[in-house]
Image 1 (cartoon, helix red, strand yellow):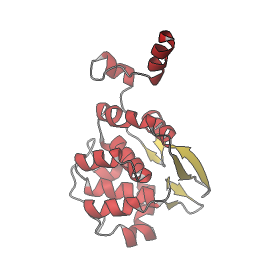
Image 2 (image 1 turned 60 degrees about the vertical axis):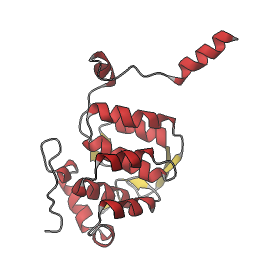
Image 3 (image 1 turned 30 degrees about the horizontal axis):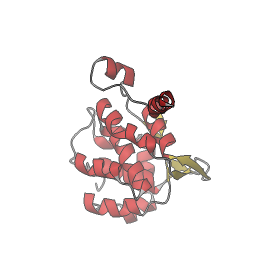
Amino acid sequence: MANRTDAHSIRGTNSQYLIDKIIRSRIYDSRYWKEECFALTAELLVDKAMELKFLGGVFGGNIKPTPFLCLILKMLQIQPEKDIIVEFIRQEDFKYVRALGAVYLRLTGTSVECYKYLEPLYDDYRKLRRQNRLGAFEVVHMDEFIDELLNKVVVCDIILPRIQKRRILEGGNDLQARKSALDDLDDVKSMM
């Protein structure tokens, strides 16, 4: 019963159900979950997030979850305040804390919130280590990871909820048109 939660529903369902049942049960059975995530609060979660050395979903023949995926599920259980998630995303020093906050926001946030808080991260070019399904590590940049979150269906073996396309939100005046850094470059060239 330790995996039950009294958290509010997200998108009409128990927040933990945003992660598939098979992966969720693998997380519950994992050693990291039992030893590191038990009785974790929002304050202690920050410390665990700062210890992350890579991101990823599940790996290996017996489908082991990464610590990153375990912390995502724990965040879905305890549902930290939105202000805490925004601070995770604004985090400059710990890139995996930022990635953790970005994935959580993408799972739980509205379309407008996702674009508002995640698009500024396109300017973050730091390298991230990602463990793939075979257990090998690969390098991905933060801006690539954010692009995957906003445009792909599955990231870190989590099926992401649908969000509206940016052009639709711009058409409905919910979002302002995105200003490209290349526009500033054109202005500089015209002055020369």
